[in-house]
Length: 114
Length: 116
Image (cartoon, rainbow over all chains, first blue to last red; front, side, top):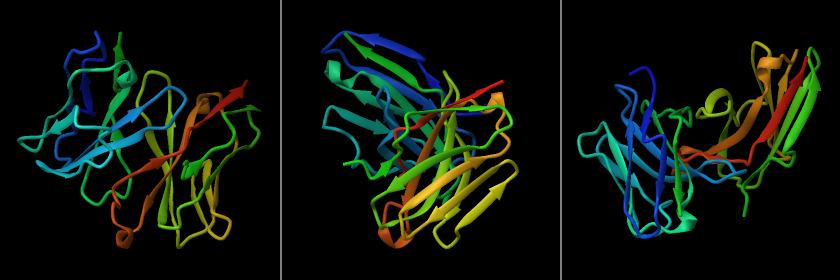
């Protein structure tokens, strides 16, 4: 596709449920990132992949959060046993190698945990 | 602890005038700085960047200035147009020697409104 695609666009779930957020990066982009953005804040780093390797997961808040990119393309961010504090916009971005921060962001998945 | 600070949540200017958006940072390991622009319901899009070895970078109506000693950068938009109305995020990445040179740290953003 022409840009980074994220699905679903909106996700409403009940506390305690697991959710999976999908990201389809720009074709040919080897680097993939997940960020989380709370209302009124800038995006905050969660994790980074280079091809299929998760190079940095230091931004994941706790072990309920995990991400994978098994074939070096599509990535899934999974949140287990969701809590209300997990409610936020989750943004995926992709880039070429050595992009020095010049990322292409998707429109995000707005997660609401009731 | 906010390492990248945008102290003005909003800014309103008249069409044709200059818009100046400001950003301060605290981490000395940052050596590359970027501005992103975000329209409602869209993801942020890259606008302009500057390396710490420069003090100015210009691209059309957009100019970014960096004052390394003051740990301050600013984005100037001249002349401002109604289509520039958006949230502007300042962001920074550390240098190669600082590690994590892929990890963007964002400010909270400034909402710019350009009035016709």
